[in-house]
Length: 454
Ligand code: ADP
Ligand code: MG
Image 1: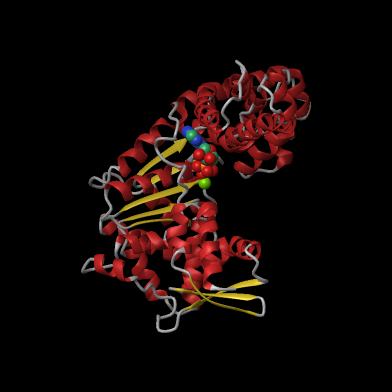
Image 2 (image 1 turned 90 degrees about the horizontal axis):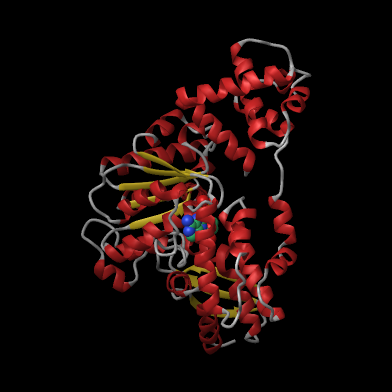
């Protein structure tokens, strides 16, 4: 294999990984040779090497093989001369390096790759996400920090990662001088552990304390991981003290994350906490319309019958990712068989997804989730105890059973240890009443609903 082969493979990689990833991760690779099935590359830092190895080595290997090279493995080594695990700036970056820290494009290199499709333009705003969207926009303006952190939370596939990437894209365009670092909590931990192992903890601290905007996705991941939490807490405080913007996402509200230290929870609550609500019909339809428009341009000549998008928005309520997947499959299938996209075709082609979305919540599941949430025994759900700490959760479960299942009051009564239907009715009414008076109760109900419906 020659440098020419690598040149060709780079061209192929550019097509598959996208421009941003290519510039960040592939371009800096230096091919140093192929011996005994091992293709070797120099990388600027060990973190860089690990990242590329984890995320791109398969693709690199595949492309090399396609280009005729006999490659079994791809290896990355920190080039000699560079300090290991230390970010060494490439000359242009060095030129831009501000006197007191690292340059924005250096930070960009350390950031997790951003999905180029996740922009504000492609984000459809509806009632369930308008607050989160407005808050994200505010942060993306890059003006003075008005709330810190911005804490976005919500169920799977509701657009948290999309919004965070959109913020990062926008800031990089509008305020190129800012050092914006986006990564998942898992990557934060991974890099922290790596820094510990390689005795580079000072570098790690310096890196995270020198950014202007830190975005950490899926922070629930670090719950229970003690030293990572500790480090995260210190990083967080150091940045807040310097008035640097922080954006965090999680799958639930700060207070609801189990095994997250109390001091972290309370720090998270100091900023603006906004949730992305489950999608409603209008939002789902809006997202489908936007996607369909995109596909119409991609698959010219395909006809989409009236009512198909409405049907999907009505039937697929789980999450946006599933919704998008359904549409992608539908267009690909229709173009393959060269047919119009009709309701019938959709039902055929998406039978499995439609069936899965039909999933019904059971009373048994409701009882289990509610018992778990309030830390009481499942048996107390059906048992006779009347103390408030047990009776109240039991009534909540009754209320949810009435709301989320098609069961009648007598049927629900039977599942709650053979209670009379009037007891169930009383329980349901009680919760309806409390919901309006007690915001904690309203929040609990919303959380439980989301857990049950996801
Ligand atoms: P989360 O991080 O909350 O689990 P993501 O941000 O990964 O969810 O979103 C899942 C998918 O749904 C992505 O492809 C994203 O682009 C899409 N999506 C979610 N919400 C919207 C929206 N309001 N408008 C357009 N696309 C959306
Ligand atoms: Mg996400």
